[in-house]
Length: 219
Ligand code: PRP
Image 1 (cartoon, rainbow, N blue to C red):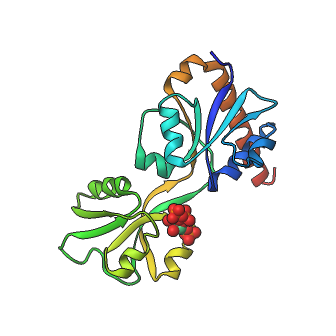
Image 2: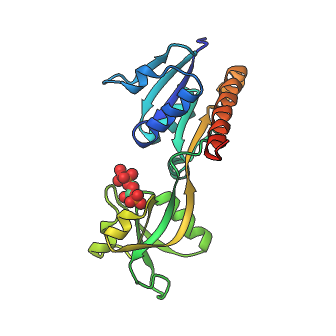
């Protein structure tokens, strides 16, 4: 059995902030910062291999145990679900899911079944189920903001970070659906098989995050 841990990192938005966190933990991340076309990278000064993957694949790899750890957004966790431990809120990649409509439209002022467009049908379904409201959900793959503009949907459920995309397209958030940030996830079997190593890793993450909070406070 290899004594190196494998961690799957979400490529793109969360990648740089994950690397910044690992560097605060003292890891030499040189190969991950200049990955070229390589997808797996060995950390030289810690027994860790880093796998770069798309967010839903991070969950798949961790759930199947081919990666022990993963860094993935809560948005993907809420949409895809799965069996793994969610052990730490890493604090970066903060945004929210919001319900948004065309500016000034009265979403709740009708009895007809509303149509909601989203890249996140499961998050949308769960949100309206909690409200006890029957809606028709239309899955969109790209810029979901187009759906209400084109008249395909009454509203959207989407990620809002700065709010600029909504504003620039004449839409407004009318309700928060869920808060999102990056999470550290762990395979359930790895947690038992590599307990000491994984607890060491989680401890180092927590220390680096606590140091960050102190710096933010000006400590
Ligand atoms: C997300 C989301 C919005 C945008 C919101 O898309 O779907 O379109 O960000 O950000 P803002 O509130 O700061 O304007 P993203 O850029 O992640 O691209 P995606 O379509 O690949 O999800």
